[in-house]
View 1 (cartoon, rainbow, N blue to C red):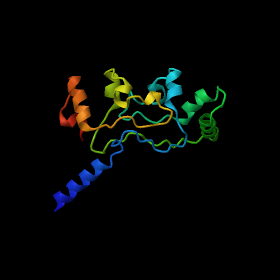
View 2: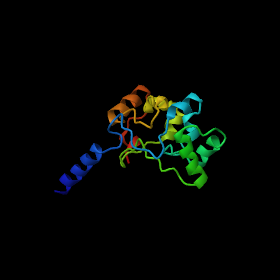
View 3: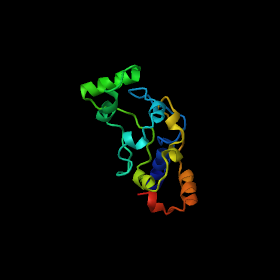
View 4: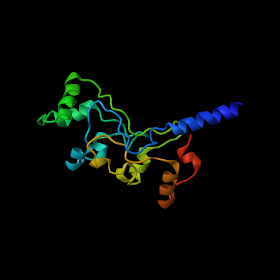
Length: 160
């Protein structure tokens, strides 16, 4: 009986994974456009500053947003709202686009250090005018990539 319940919980967790549907665009506190930032040649790792040192890439800090936006005209509604958070010294409550199940371990830093471009996993997010999940991150897709790059496909490399 316990095994059956555990199996159902695992299957339910797989079904509700935050990575399960491409094209999802959760409501954000600011309608964040990646495209103008990419067009200005601001690299992903500038805003997602923990990609090379921690497992999670991290959400952009409000102070970091303010370091650029305070020196430019606040023409767009998104820029104005960004500066409201900066001026109030409040954390912008970003909603994550990708969240892997708890039993997986995905270290961004390993991928960055292996010179894997962000777009290989995050597709065309740099062309988006809203924060949109562009790819479904499923195990077989990851395994195919690992095999193609001759990276480990040992279960314990990605699973706790």
